[in-house]
Amino acid sequence: MTTKRLTMAQALILFLANQYVERDGVETRFFAGVWGIFGHGNVAGVGQALQQYADKMRFYQSRNEQAQVHAAVAYAKMKNRLQTFACTSSIGPGATNMVTGAAVATVNRLPVLLLPGDIFAERIQAPVLQQVEVEFSQDFSANDVFKPVSRYWDRINRPEQILAALPEAMRVLTSPADTGAVTLALPQDVQAEAYDYPTAFFEKRIWHIPRNRPDATHLQQAANLIRNSSQPVIIAGGGVIYSEATDALRAFVDATGIPVGETQAGKGSLPYDHPLNLGATGVTGTPGANILAREADLVIGIGTRYSDFTSASNSAWHNPDVRFININVAEFDAHKRNALALTGDARAVLEELGAALAGWQTDDDYQARARKYNAEWDAEVTRIYNLEHGPLISQGEVIGVVNSLSRPQDVVLCAAGSLPGDLHKLWRTRDPKGYHLEYGYSCMGYEIAGGMGAKMAAPERDIYVMVGDGSYLMMNSEIVTMVQEGIKVIIVILDNHGYASIGGLSNAIGSDGFGTKYRHRTESGHLDGETLPIDFAQNAASMGAHVIRAQNRDEFAEAILEAHKHEGGPVAIVIEVDRSQRVGGYESWWDVAVAEVSENPAVQQARAEYEKAKSNERYAL
Image 1 (tube, rainbow, N blue to C red):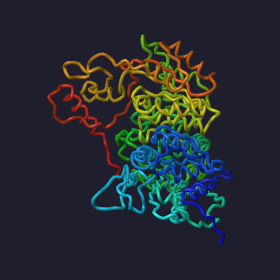
Image 2: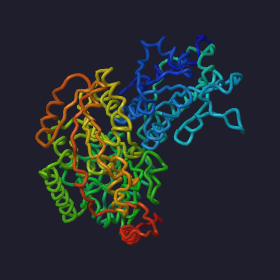
Image 3: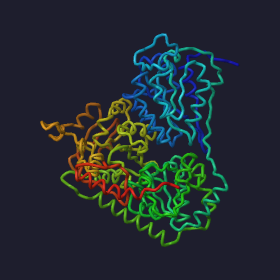
Image 4: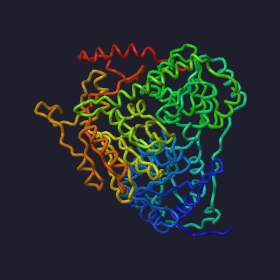
């Protein structure tokens, strides 16, 4: 057996450079590069290896360890989980900065490889700089906090351990059912230790991504349930997009006449103007989607994990006889809601289920009702797009201008605040990859870093990052990285002087927006003074972005057109919006617990309304 003497870090990088995936005969290199920030925990190991093998694995310099994971996650999302990045950090705070990004990846079922530096395996140096000490073990470090938010976790205490660990890491990363964050903690001394590795370890390896089929008996049972239903609805989740099943879904819907509601991750499964597309479903849903869900006798979930926003905190389905069929590549999700589980790839299952239902359709009246809801909602979107609200523009109008002036292939990207709910309802999707919301973890700060990753994955598309001032202030550092790399992302910064989403929620539970506005503290001790004078345009310009200020709707439209023509790095458009002009809720509810006792009459009233609405929650039995 021939061997090659390398450090553990050198062997790691060579291995990653030769990993490929294949689905439907299309082969893709799995790792597009490595993001990183160097410190004493990784500079002499992974850092040295990346410099030595720069021709085999490109290194990208980030400004924040959490942000680099967001960029990798967004890239993987745009690539339908067929390609991603590795992310490396030093030990201590550099490593734990990545924990939030790991949670984003794992909750959203998106692959990313995390390589945090770790304390010395030989221990003679302990306690080292940035080491977390505990009295009950010496085999413990800050990196143990990655365990709950990783789909696979290991600590490499000997250089030869990567021979076993890396194939297992790749198995998880490339699994449609098990993917998420994979963490390999790398002690800094072990990174630099040499070992005689078998050269076969570095040969090209192709990981096949299968399209698994469901059990034949379950498939026939599902077909019988559908044939015996009178008001079935489909809930299309992210699995439809990731499995590239949008054409199969459209063929299935056209053949059966079953209307579709879309989750945040599944939005774009059908074009917005398909007559049986009811639009968003759940807490941030449309009237048609929520009314038909409430009445449905059969719910067919495709690639959804049924978050509380999709299920309206398990209050969405009122029919006492409602049944569920779940199509999902993950057995864990397929069995949710006591469903008949069709565990398999969404595209493959839809094709086989469609064949089993050949000749069957919902009745004409039911389809006509769904088409009516689609047309009514389109009219409502047009109304909100054209409110002509003033003097400050409304958030719904901002969405309308961006949607109307963007191209069908362009991408809107968001993660947190009130924007995701409004976008879910109002954005007219024209392309399966045109709507990019991180709403599994709804992580403030994902937006700008995620926009960068999305653009790297799809350079032919314009990426419109829509971000509120709260999320912008949490993490805007990757504007500098976009300037460095010449990455153009159009960042629309909505200035509403605080946390508008939670401000509205605070009002709804009787607390009058407490602690959600950006205001000076007054002599009374409260944050109720003048609005803070934050200049977002000047801030973005200081990091190198091309900045456009817009004062009204017309100027904002001109700014979008100018940004589209701009060549080079990031563009930031800043516009002030009216936080009090909101897009309403439609036929739905979200369980946010209200104080059971209070001296505040507004809280008392909110509690009474809460208890009434909560009576609609149901266990899935």
